[in-house]
Each structure stands twice: as structure tokens, then as C-alpha cells.
Image 1 (cartoon, one colour):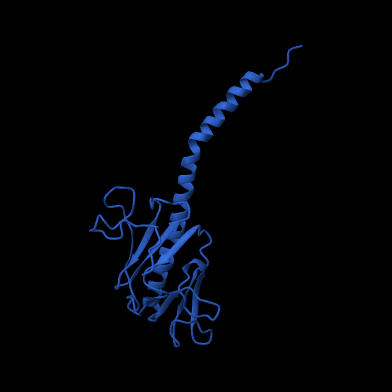
Image 2: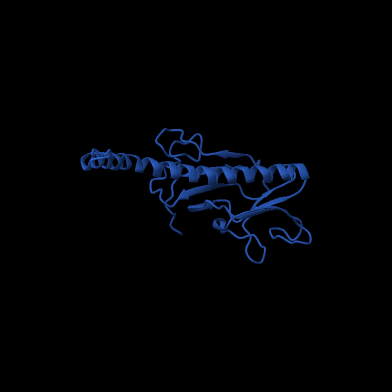
Length: 192
């Protein structure tokens, strides 16, 4: 009686082909995962920044965008997420009696460092302009050693938010539109 099935040779050939295909696609899958993570974090941050600015204009109020510590005061640890609230007095701290919490974000997909060069708080006035220092939010993924996946959001004093771009086509975004030597970097700067 003849039984139908795979021979050992056929099985080994298929197994070898599968292993070769997996070896070839593994780097691509890693790149896709890194790209997706960075894009998801930066899109969420961009959406929340635009929401903050529009809320300030629409509600004609001062909107504070900052990470809060346990005492509900703005602090500089952006890794823990951030809160967006209508900020009355005292400034730069959330008081449940006088302030209105609009949004609290934990940045669930954070697999790297989120850095803001403008300090520990971002404040939009009733015209949508900054009432704090301008700055750059930069996200460096933990597995990105070359800054090829690093992205940034630049906020100017007018409250405008723009995304970093690769203007010199070297695979690394620049902070400045007009300076091809302003590549983003994930190397921590030495403290002076």
C-alpha cells in the first residue's frame, strides 16, 4: 500500500528555504518595528501639542503641557508622560480646585528617550504662542545607535510645530531646514 506524504528530503529542502527566508527578512522586520515605534510616539506627541495649542486659542486660556510629579508640579522627566491643563494660579502646577485637566498621556509605546530642549514645561498663551522657552522634542529609540530612526518636533515661539526632515538625504533628520550640518543625534551631551 502506498501512503502519501512528505519524504525526509522534501521536508529538509522546505525547512532550509524557510530558514533562508527568515534570515533575509529579520533585519527588515526590525527596521519596520523601529520605524513604526518612532512614528507612533512622534505622531501622538504631535497630535497632543496641536491639541494644546488649539485649546489655548479656542478657550482663550493659558494651557500648560508638562510632566507632573507626585506633588502635581511640572518637572522635567518626559519619560513618564505628560499632562495638558488649563493653568490658572499657581502657575506650572496642577491644582484640582482652579485648573482643568484636559489630557493625561503615558506614551505607552515609549521604547527610548524623549528629550525636550526647552526645559520642564511648555506653555501656550491665549493666542497660541509660547509663553515659555521654545524647544525641540527629540525621540531616540533604544536600539537606534546611528540616529537613522531619530525624529524631532520643533516648536518655535509662535507656537508653530514642525517635524524634522532629512534635507541632505543622508538618512538622518536635521533640526534646521537651512543647515545640512544640524543632524539629530542620540549621543547624550556631556554636562559642563
